[in-house]
Amino acid sequence: MFRHSVLPVHKHSLSVNGTWCGSLVCRLTLATLPFSVTVAFLLLLFSGACRTKKTWPVSFPQEELKKRLTPMQYHVTQERGTESAFTGGFTHHKDEGTYTCVVCGALLFSSNTKFDSGSGWPSFFDLVKEESVTVSDDFSYGLHRVEITCSQCGAHLGHLFDDGPRPTGKRYCINSASLGFQPNDAPSSSSSSAAEDGAASSSVSNGKTEL
Image 1 (spheres, one colour):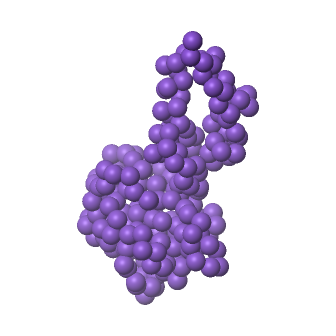
Image 2 (tube, rainbow, N blue to C red; image 1 turned 90 degrees about the vertical axis):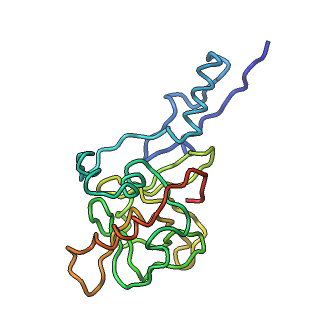
């Protein structure tokens, strides 16, 4: 009779926003579970579904967001989508100013920290403030990545990698569709127009991408 192996579940590897996605025990013995349950567990794990629902300081009705955001902006920020590489309006954007969350307007990145990573998505090596974003483990596609979300409204922004330039060594790889922009010489009320123009040129990627 086929015997399932023991699958160790480590708190560190499955930690999401400080919450462990495993059970109360430190080791899950798949031999004690029906095969169908084992398969379902593994599918949830590798689809990235092992996540904690969080209440954000700012929230908006979904119907409002569907009207206010472009289809690409909604897909990226609310459905954790990804725009195709090199299609976003902010990929080669070089104006001086501050990049904001397209959903709630929170300040995220300065143009002084933007750099050309060659990845096809806007990239930054630092945040305006450390608390500007929330990071969490993302196990989608069977890979472990670090997802970045807006710490105010929970909008999906992109992913964080450890291959950026000095001094931080970080690369915040961000979808253009999740960003707004405030030029240095313009009032803050005009921050969303550039984002809407940029996101409108983006397209949905059904394949697996770096972002």
